[in-house]
Amino acid sequence: MAIPMHSERFRWEAGTRLFDQGRAVAADEAGALGALRQAIRAGGEFLVGPGGVERLEQGTSGFLRTRSSGTTGTAKTIRRSHRSWIASFEVSRDHLGIGAADVYGVLGDLAHSLTLYALVEGAHLGATLHGLAGLRPGRQARLLEEAGVTVLYCTPTQLRLICEADRPLPRLRHILCGGGRLPPGLRARVQALTPTATLREFYGAAETSFVAWGAAEGPEGSVGRAYPGVEIRIGPPDGPPAGPEGEIWVRSPYLFEGYAEGDSAETRWCDGFLSVGEIGRLAADGGLSIVGRRNRMVTIADQNVFPEALEAFLLADPAVTHCAVMPQRDPRRGTVLVAVIAGTGDAATAERLRRACQAAFGPLAAPRRMIFWSDFPLTLSGKPDLGAIARHLDGAA
Image (cartoon, rainbow, N blue to C red; front, top):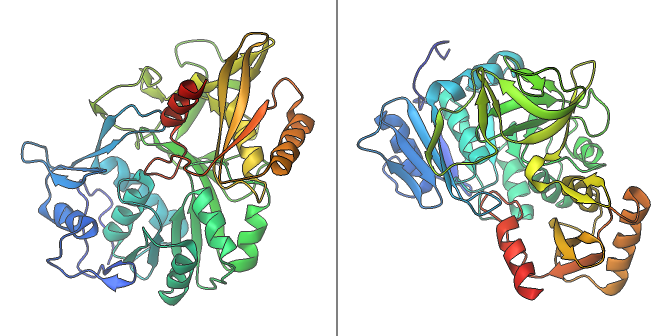
């Protein structure tokens, strides 16, 4: 069934089937996925967050709120129009050929905006939906195969864990991967297991939605070119061009309305453009590379260092599943970096990783220590909880 080009509200198509961990979700069933279906069908404004799905009696039809603690632990509630997401549903339909015949797979919790987006897109387009949150990656991979999933939304970490299950997924057509940097070598592993699928890496934020995407057209580290309908600028729109590297500003039909709760000093508007404080490089051919968050940059011996680059390097190592590179005060050098890594690694692994970082980034920028934590804290979106990690490090200092 063709979806109207100018829909102003989400739709839950009559033909959309919903499954949770391989089990069909009954029409009147409670639970997060069932509550999402009911909220969309009711048509009013609703909120999705760690507490589940809440219909807002005083809300406005055609609007959605999402609440997240974020990686820094600061709670924010984002408010956006349905239309801002529907515009990108139409991109998936028109540019990728996704529709009612497709089967979606989503791996994360509904409170993660990527999972929520994928489920709402699939329902709006009339596809079959499979929510696989809470299962081990091997079980997720088996259900992806058994369900004949054709469209997979995931983070790089989720995708890497699915690949480690080493299960071919021959019916996959599209993999859309966002929420972090794609580790070197992962694209080749994906291609071996999903020979008919196109892996598209995308960059965006909860406030901006899609900004850039690509399917390996650019150099290593590039997240692709501007997503259809997006205008990207390096440097504030009311000032002179900043050159190839600087703060990323975007203008598009996909931007959020504002914060219903909380705020962020990094989120700023200017002449219809929005920035969330990310630093990037824009190549002459339009390819965008992400350097890191402005508020995470540290200066060591007059050298600006973005921890995200070190984290991406470490995550390419098979011994590292999650990590966070954090600044610490040092009486001699002012600031040094330490790498906190999930798991129970040994001294030999720590030394190997430290030396590899030194070789790649130099002795000043490389982490001075590698710290392994068996209870490594993550947010609901599966990202390192930087606030919790910083508090733990401060308490141990």
